[in-house]
Length: 281
Image (cartoon, rainbow, N blue to C red; front, side):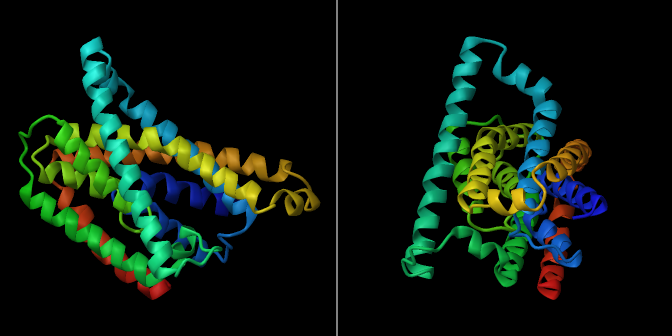
């Protein structure tokens, strides 16, 4: 893998991961256009590092807002922490239930089936992108500039919708969760802050899972025989830095359009991108 390819993937991943446009669809299209194999060990390692970079971008960007929201008092921490717990639990229940259903209905209990096998399905990804686009457009019509704060009820719904995003690449996580908040009458800024607080809770587990897949697939042997980890770690670290920078830019972009009432434009983009995914896939 060339350094230029690493940088392109880092920028695509860093921006699309945080914008409501589905990073998976964009990264897979970019990989195919550059002739890369997404199942290769070096690709898995790179994506782990890119996800790490975007997670740090979220932490840096929202830290001041979260400090004012979560850490002003013990009571605030207790209330907000409970909302995060409810949202995360809802994500886990819905996400695991969907993956169980997919394995037992779609895969017919195939013991070797993994949910990642769905990620290369261009039609499913295009349909998920289109669904996300429609959802964003509908939520934009229901949005009110002066909304309410996050409640336990809205946290439950936002977390449940996030669970739907787990098995369906293309159904943008940030697009779906923020749109759910808007549809429930949550203020734009609060919906955004809670959506990304949820992702910070879940991202370490997702990164650990990807790292475990790398080890489980016995990728250590071919990497070692190809010259060791050194030639792969350096580009991956550089990619992490670029995904961090791209993530910060993307978050500023998202916040600006959300506050300016331009959320619907992301929905239009998702609808157009679904057609591109079908054409490339």
